[in-house]
Length: 236
Image 1 (cartoon, rainbow, N blue to C red):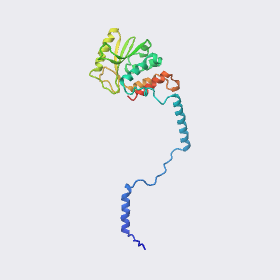
Image 2: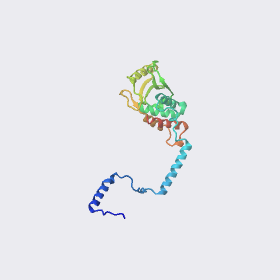
Image 3: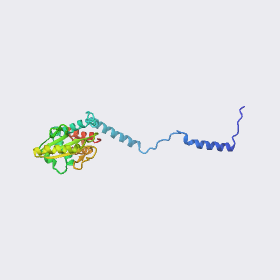
Image 4: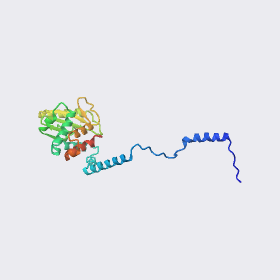
């Protein structure tokens, strides 16, 4: 017959102390039911609305940014070339002109750019103002009365006196044609030269959105591409 030893009171007290000491080390336990803060009917209705919106976005092609899958990535040359193409009147007509005017108004607010661009303009990339290949400006907008150079940066930094050299070259080119010269920096950082203004990629995104209707169904195809480009570059 198995004999049972009676546990004395002092031993019970020590066991209680031991279990209390071990309690913080014991993981798990019985799971508690989560607290339900929303009625199930409301949740079903919310998911139904999300499903409808998702289906509409798929049908309208609003889930994939075309510029993000076009291979531009964070390449400065490719994004500058895309920007130059978007600004051409042949691309989006009045929307392209509004986009460019918004950008110029942000960087150089002293001029009436909408009126100036309406008289005609052209956009060039990798432009050498005086034929020196060492001083090639990323983007140049030439209108009736102005010559605007834009140095584009995403991940790279500025070279030694790069903005100063570009400003000098642009001034010499503008003096030959009787136009007013401007240079500004488009980068995720501010211009180190107080005489050279700068804007960010987030401001490019805002200018793009401001050039098109706010509602997707009211935008033309070109306007949607402009806004999509803004969405693509705003994280730079």
